[in-house]
Amino acid sequence: MTKKEQNIEERILKAAEQIFHKKGMDGARMQEIADEAEINKAMLHYYFRSKQLLFEAVFIKAFSMLAPRLNKILNDESSIEDKVRNFSFNYISFISEHPYLPNFIIQELNKNPDFFLSLKSKQEFPKLDGFKKQLEEEIDKGLFKPIKAEQLFINIISLNAFPFIGESLIKGIANIDDDNYNKLIEERKTQVADFIIDAIKIK
Image (cartoon, rainbow, N blue to C red; front, side):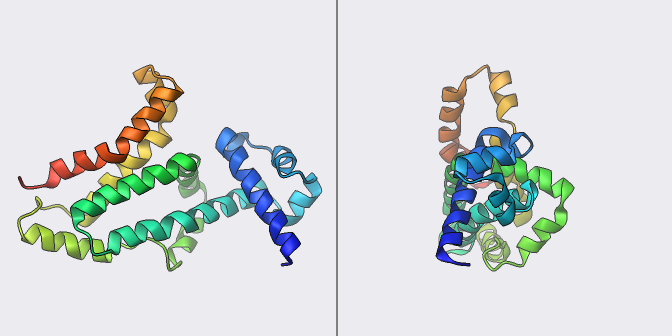
């Protein structure tokens, strides 16, 4: 790929991310993305034959930035408590900038599970081996109540991801506007970790 082609592809991906952010996968139109990238629709189709392929490319680009960060947190030398705090803070911070990702994951897990199986082979894909071993050691030391690493990880992901997946539901039930919803999300960068640690830590 020439530098010019690479620049055009980057423009397309940036434009697509903005449109997907505003309208989601189903609401986005290829013509809108082409207009945002300041190219014609024929050129857009030359680079990406379908909206699905373009969405996957946008996701992979974001995933390639988020996954190594999360994998490093799970497997570094910090304590389990620090891992929970760092994971929650980094995840919510990143998804706040890419809020279309959680819904995309849910949709694609149902429609196209093979796409995610292909991501698992990537080196940066988050792995729980080190996290699991460390948690078992800290449980043995009497620092935490017995809990499986898989269950703890599900709790962390669920509490961090759902506010983005259920944004409209939360706004409706809580009767809050965008500004107050964003304040709640900002608070969750620390409150999710506090909740989880309080639940598993032996005081």
